[in-house]
Picture 1 (cartoon, one colour):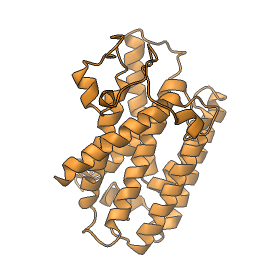
Picture 2 (cartoon, one colour):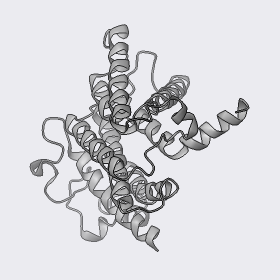
Picture 3 (cartoon, one colour):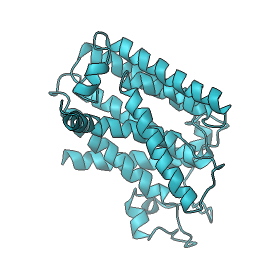
Amino acid sequence: MVSFFLFVFGIVIGSFLNVVSMRYNGEHFVFDPKVIGGRSHCEHCKETLRWFELVPLFSFLVQGGRCRRCKAKLSLQYPAVEFISGLIFVAVPWRLAALTDGGPLALFIAALWTLAFLIFLLMSVIDIRIGIVPDELNIALGAVAIALGASLVVSPEGSGSLMGSLGDMFGLNGNLWTSRVVGAIFGFIFFEFLILVTRGKGIGMGDVKLALPLGLLFGWPDIIPVIMCAFICGALVGIFLIVSKKTTMKGVLPFGPFLAFGAAFIFFCGAPMAQWYLHLIGL
């Protein structure tokens, strides 16, 4: 029942994230009331939507993915973002339950990680839609990373590497903040190096800025597999799009969503993947 209510609450938050991402144009603050305020309307016929057309997931399914009035197809972004948001509210606490024994700060830590992945989700949708990683979302992610680090210092449960014993072997276990700062510096320098090598054509400044809070959130050495997963996933998607002739070698592919995917993959699968690797090499 707890998971059910968390999922329901999550899809409601996802509905709000849809509004923000659809109305953000890069010229105003992400949560500017002048931009995200006002009644919801059909993106095609511009008719104001009634309350029963705004029920997350349910309305989209009942209406067959079409506007009730003009019958135009609605974007799959609506149910996708709502569903992923619901999963975040269920899956993040479930994953953290395996890392902690439910100490006094466990709920607060779970809330911070949940907020971090909601920021990743909103950031990814905006990057896909208009090719921008908003600075204010990077700042918000950095604030969450600092709050999480402070919480883990007070309650060190689950403060080790998300890669398990493999990460701890190469980590800076003596000081949590040293690990976080080194992770942020590494991510920033790595992406700055890519900009220099590709002369600004291989990666965007938004991704460079994202590397700082991302490294601060995951720390050293976890930031390395996060970036690796992002590039592997990005390469596979790019190859598929080129083979299917949906883009060309000169096409632009937003990288923010792949960094978000890398973060999610390491958060949920980092330890099992590391354990498999250690077993593979006989350690």
